[in-house]
Image (cartoon, rainbow, N blue to C red; front, side):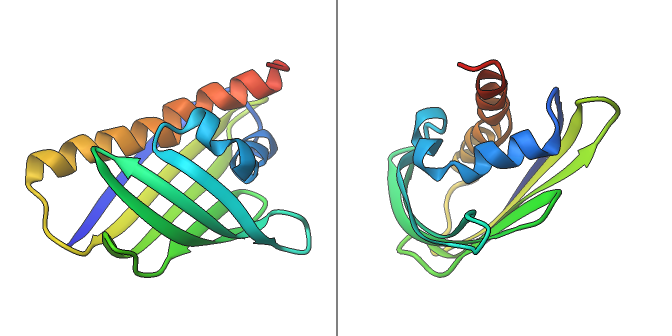
Length: 148
């Protein structure tokens, strides 16, 4: 059962600042309430994370994933193979500069769930994921840029 979620928002930050926060896997559990742990297994030659082992918990359901990340100047994508809760996952951030120091951030996530869930649970889970992926990320970017 494939579940899709997406949201587009504007950040008061350049794409590089957003990508730097996304690449700081060691700090992700500090701003993402969904991440119980995240650890970089290995890195691309430029130092950005390549494979990441993560434990996530949403609405009482815990899942352990190995994520494979790929990076560009204005985007980041990750994919996960099958886990206990999912047959696969694909997530991406696409960043479009807008004027001075602003960026349009589009977040997309596709999860292929291993078992069907009731619609109301999926709706609540999607809102939680989108809030973390955009609003909590925005707060972290703002704190990082202000030195906090």
